[in-house]
Image 1 (cartoon, rainbow, N blue to C red):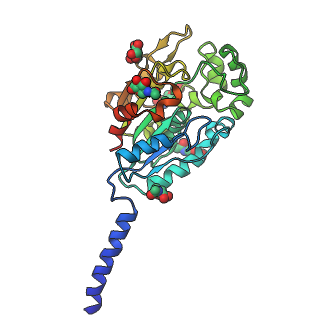
Image 2: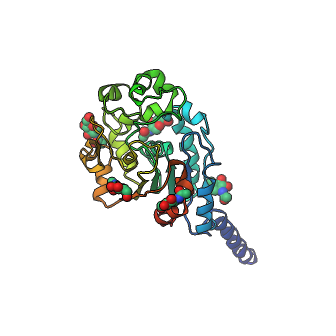
Length: 294
Ligand SMILES: *[C@@H]1O[C@H](CO)[C@@H](O)[C@H](O)[C@H]1NC(C)=O
Ligand SMILES: *[C@@H]1O[C@H](CO)[C@@H](O)[C@H](O)[C@H]1NC(C)=O
Ligand SMILES: *[C@@H]1O[C@H](CO)[C@@H](O)[C@H](O)[C@H]1NC(C)=O
Ligand SMILES: *[C@@H]1O[C@H](CO)[C@@H](O)[C@H](O)[C@H]1NC(C)=O
Ligand SMILES: *[C@@H]1O[C@H](CO)[C@@H](O)[C@H](O)[C@H]1NC(C)=O
């Protein structure tokens, strides 16, 4: 009898400690931020600061994986497993789920991660100025690639390009669709533009998110066309075709149309923000990121 009555308060203390250490005390879901090309957690610190100021106590994780130059020279499929391990660790601590903010190149890497992770619990996927349907523009910031966008396919649509330059994994030359489909091992596969035996599983996994938030704008200066951040892209005349008229949307080949019909896609077209400023802009954070982190 005496033993039992002493055990009850001890058990409650242990229980409370377990609850507190697992992060329940803050009420905010953990956030994982996936950095962009040539970045690391250093550049994402401004975003981290805005999150913890708005939502004190939020557990924010910014995996320092494939940082700086490594983000360019390691192809995206090879970056995926380590990011997956890091994100799964955070997911395991939060039964309510986590939110994912992925910047620039990180945004298509995250789309692949969401397709790959069969038991993910990502609630909101915030794609911050990411080339979701690819890139066809200035490459002056990328070593090893021709400066002229018309010539880039010659390097990118080869095995060497695909194996050694991450940008090649989402290089989408509208004048060389055939080579894109045949040689690009990442974006057309992820999009199920070419036959992919896993497409059904990947789509089901992707569709486990609650909301897809697409943030981009006309003054970005790097993502080209900037509408790629909204799942728009060039046709062969370099006219931009918006998301709703894209074949991958019409075929619902990886879940975009399903999400749209569910009312789960939020698009933000914001002027006045250059590419490297997205993660540090308080106005952008307040309008388009903070509301999805509660
Ligand atoms: C956030 O969660 C991760 C994963 O559980 C943990 O390793 C880390 O220590 C936590 N960070 C803080 C500041 O609580
Ligand atoms: C996820 O990726 C790993 C390789 O990292 C692969 O072995 C596995 O089959 C993939 N799972 C799915 C569902 O795509
Ligand atoms: C992927 O594309 C193939 C045709 O190439 C189609 O048969 C399949 O249903 C598509 N998968 C999904 C999930 O839409
Ligand atoms: C985005 O905003 C710009 C500037 O306000 C405007 O010119 C453009 O038409 C908008 N585009 C879309 C797709 O809403
Ligand atoms: C921040 O974003 C707003 C639009 O929301 C824009 O007008 C402003 O120029 C941006 N500031 C910077 C420094 O990028």
